[in-house]
Image 1 (tube, rainbow, N blue to C red):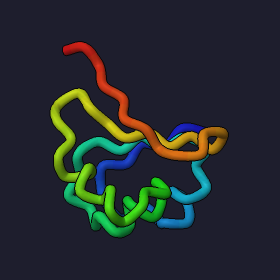
Image 2 (spheres, helix red, strand yellow):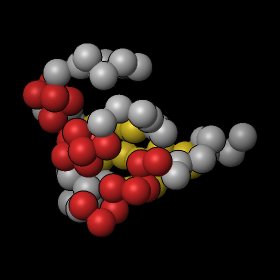
Image 3 (tube, helix red, strand yellow):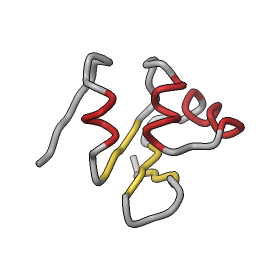
Amino acid sequence: MISIATRPQVSGEILANCGVLIVFKSYMQRSLLREILNLEEENEDYLSILEEGQCIARVNSVKRPFLLWGIL
């Protein structure tokens, strides 16, 4: 299943159960994003400094989230 959401009305439970989660710079509640990405609190600021073409990815088979960026 693939789900794309641009609004914060998506249930936190749905997001938490995704096998792969990609988050671009967002103005959603950073605490919610930090929780579903499994980011440590001291890394929460990364969510607000992502640049164009960058995202943070969480994959269930990888212990920690990681930064991805594309060539623009």
